[in-house]
Image (cartoon, rainbow, N blue to C red; front, top):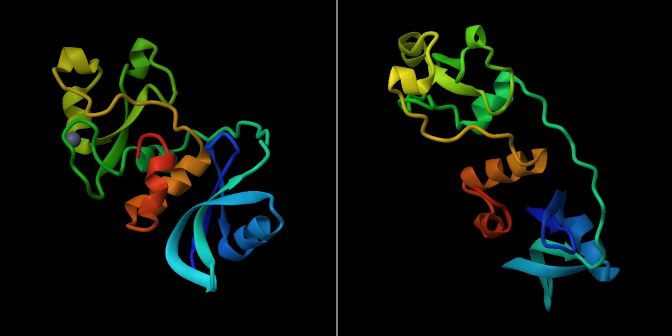
Length: 165
Ligand SMILES: [Zn+2]
């Protein structure tokens, strides 16, 4: 049986849990059912896929580390200039390091070797190369997790609760 997306009282996604824990929260009255998938735990108790907590939980923001792996994941493992997907991916500083471009989520994108070499130490504008997406900091690690499930074809009903996927 499946995973359950837990929403805060404010409808923001909070975490992913298993169906057993979700059912316990529902039975204890700590959460309400928002979506179910048409299967039943027992009669008149549909199996939840999204639940919402009745009381708001305050969560500290968890920083997502700026790593090669996370940048590739954010960019869908595709070159942000030409769309190439494959093994030969590198990281490109949008504003080159030699021009004081920083190591930030907003300044590092996935690029194929060809595009990286072609761009050299120029800005995209100077090189006349257009970024397919404006690079930005990911929303949260939960957002990463949810996007992975949805893009992998699971839990399409989660999509409407998460921005940008
Ligand atoms: Zn490319």
